[in-house]
Image (cartoon, rainbow, N blue to C red; front, side):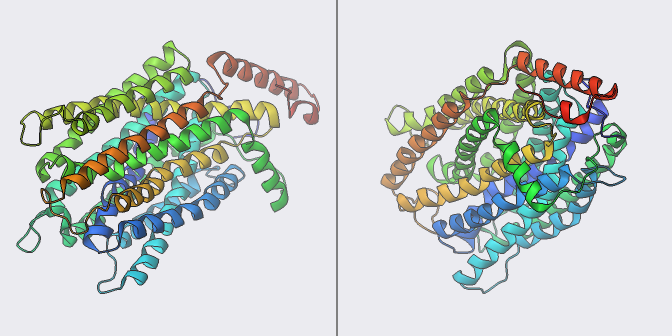
Length: 494
């Protein structure tokens, strides 16, 4: 392994793709818990106001904004016999599991203020430890291959495993852990179930991280080595801001941010919509995991298919638009009186199919956005002379965690705005409250999607420009190998 080794455009073996993708089961489990259960657990079970829960997660998210790029920059410059990424991946497994257990087992009898602080601290811990794994792991996508389409295939596997992990624990939560008892006739309001869920999820996360790290360990000799240099903190900070100033990346970051906000709002409010707006049973909600799994598989197939035929940017924009239109339609039909009441037997099949289509489109869009981040790496290297996969994917990791953070915050504010009752039972929420919920949720969701599309229009990297960047970098490497001074080849004008 040498600094001069370039990631190749080779097709990766199936075991490499599987081992690489399997690690994101941990992120899928963590994110699923934050998206679907954290708000209702701390709000309806532990008694914190929804706005307070949202504020706690937003505070943790702000801390993330500083931690993520630091981990990315350190990872890019880390030197060890296990390369730049794997030491962090191994180190994260146990701390991730322990902090996740703590999240779902808060101390009994604490008041609101103490519980608020506890939630902030533990949320920061779990987010920080998942960062230590997720950023180096994501950065491997740009190191394992430079091929425009192979990256999309690789990240499709990653997204698919994330969905599989999240949906498996989601189904288990509804069918195994969150069961009603004599004291809690509504299973999702049973505190004991969340405690057991936390332990089971923690074990899955630790195993997934270790399996992925061990399975990709053999790739270390093919990966880039950090440059030999003595860099001061000031130099690293200047490099970090210089690298992140890439115009295409800033456009993509904005799009990814608002798209993730929209997805986070959708996920966080979905348990309330399923339980109170549509009045589905616990079993019916659990079976939505199969619609989402079907959607994830379709999305993982669809993304590389459209990537091969079209450029990634227009494909991602089309997927995002389709996801919004399909996802919002049933709610709008209910609000306008076109869709019958919840007693109609066709409600559940309709929402089930709608979830498959909307989620498949959204998943494909997310995969393409991730693949576009990987393509920024070479564009930046051409402009700066530095290859910083970890730093770019640190920004992506932060945005991914914004899915749950901003989603919970926005959901909490939305529920407070519509005056949603605390301790509510399905079927007993006033009709005017449910109408305000739908009438507020859809416009906010739509606005976030539209802003994401506007930002994405500024992304300028295409298949052709990416291939040109690879050719120019290869030419620079060849010149360096033939004795050209490094200063003349370290940075090329675009």
